[in-house]
Length: 639
Ligand code: HEM
Ligand SMILES: *[C@@H]1O[C@H](CO)[C@@H](O)[C@H](O)[C@H]1NC(C)=O
Ligand SMILES: *[C@@H]1O[C@H](CO)[C@@H](O)[C@H](O)[C@H]1NC(C)=O
Image 1 (tube, protein in one colour):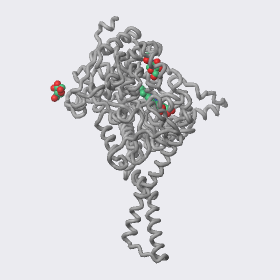
Image 2 (tube, rainbow, N blue to C red):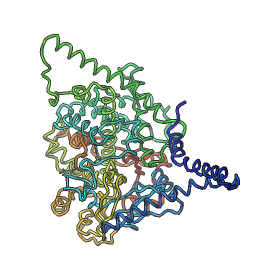
Image 3 (cartoon, rainbow, N blue to C red):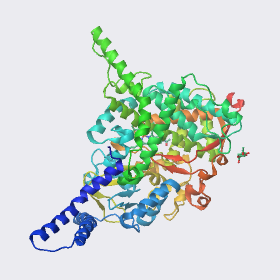
Image 4 (cartoon, protein in one colour):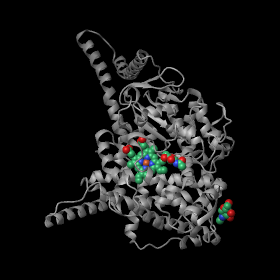
């Protein structure tokens, strides 16, 4: 019989502490037998069970004593602690999980920043963890900005064992989920694929963007709003599966969802389900793949919020197994086919007596990531893990950013019009955008950057300290942290504003210069793409690049940054070529997922939200982001 993850955790725990009751019982037995003592059975039982909490308590005390004395020796202090009411901060864990499900992303964690400063301790079940939004710490955690003080972090920052274990089911040992040599190997193998501007992808983006826009137009003409988040997620999924392994899952062929109060059996529902030329069977497998992958992703994200104790939610069985079986059913034949082709090629070359002239670093036109990877390895597991890692890293991040970009454009028609003017001037009303066009469109890039500043698709990041060391503290003595401690960086807050003590940086984040240190977060949340274009860039951003790091920096910087800008720019240009106006349609979403009424009085973005953002590994909008758009007039086309 195989034990579930939770059972294993409990068993390991029992084995670790189980020796103490056995020890107590044995000592009592020996004393009674040979030393003539007469300890009654109930006392032995009491001692045997009482010893467990005692041992745990003493072990924790000793660890803390060690930590505090190490800090004192180095003239440092320990970061202030978020104190819960219950032992082990169980109530804090519960509150954080609840807030993840129903609250505003990260809000509970920010409130503590106001109270405890930009760095605090977050101890769940007596485990030491650090939460920070302090750019000074981001700076030391990222070797790109200079040598890290006291070698706190390894030259290659680690994602850490706990995170790896949570993600293992989905990501195995791919680039996103490995450390050390394994990570270095994966990264060096995958990087060349992203290092060139792969013009060939534009043809692919064009096909899928066109399909998505047709689908939108068709639905909008029936008078219904569309869920833009759903639509753009299909666009990124179809594009990603095609450029990663050359087998598009064609999620854009299935029917779009309808507003909540429209039954799917309405007369329009049938007409919008385009018949696909792919066989039904393949299509079912592809659809099942997409659904199972999303479910596995969601599960891993839930695990990540629970920390080390996640297996307690999966006592009897590993919930990811079933999802991964479905994922593999689709993916394995594709991988095997790629390997078969490789073997055949090698065989033919041998037969002709020519040596493989293929340079592994050479990327050919139209080559998929899988084509590229089989030049390095024939290991099915490695290929499987790497392809899924990149799918996870690249798909939701771009979809989310596009969703929030359109959300913000719909709320700011002036920005929309200005961006549209840039599109029509630089690219024209119908032409397919080129790489050169995109490079020149500075306003478009500023719009994307401003979206990423307010809604960073990856709202937090984790690093584990390899050695003990000191962290900068702007309010006094440095903070001491022991080795192997997870640090969570809250990018969401970092992008939104630095600690309010640093006025010059706060200024960059708000619209005008008349801020004071006491201004609320709300003012820093003003949508203003111009901050990426005017004098504020040289004044704030250039000297402090780490205040805006949606892709992080250093050795683990996002591999797909350029790719993502290209894909998102391409889609936004095509969108604005086709549509000239947009408005949010919150009434189309189910009322149960819309922001609760009490949000309206909150400061900052929370008070402005028309849809409720949520965060798992990436940000997203619960219940979808519904919009209506107006197709551009023919007059535009004559420009
Ligand atoms: C708006 C879109 C995107 C955002 C905001 C984003 C953000 C990030 C962030 C914050 C990281 C973590 C870096 C770290 O741990 O220090 C990351 C890693 C990564 N991203 Fe992206 N990303 C985006 C799009 C993409 C795309 C399109 C791809 C590929 C097609 C991609 C591939 C990767 C990979 C492979 C890693 C792991 C790198 C490593 O651990 O060495 N990303 N990304
Ligand atoms: C659905 O809701 C919209 C907006 O609230 C309304 O205009 C429409 O009549 C409703 N449709 C149905 C079938 O109830
Ligand atoms: C947008 O941000 C990126 C860094 O992520 C930077 O390289 C680029 O110059 C920025 N562009 C504009 C127009 O702000």
